[in-house]
Length: 129
Image (cartoon, rainbow, N blue to C red; front, side):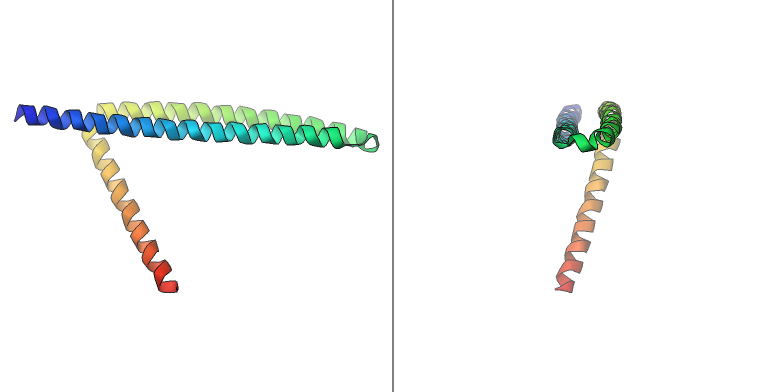
């Protein structure tokens, strides 16, 4: 029986490690998307600045300062979100390692709710047709 429990625990740990890795990959993907969006925003600001004529120099200068401050605030906010996301991922991994049975039960319950919602929305979209 002890061998069965060890096998179950090893399988559970492997499943939890896989879930933690997948969560980490999703977080990194989201971070890359946020970085790219910020970079595109900054590039767009630079393009606007280049195309602004001399007649709009004063207005463009003020707008440029505002957009730079906005871009800086956006980058700082993005960095805070990244840090919070990494902290949340670390906390999740720790919880999964500390409470593997609860984690599996929570994941199973969340999956059941998701399947139920998908089934409910699937039926209602078929009924509308």
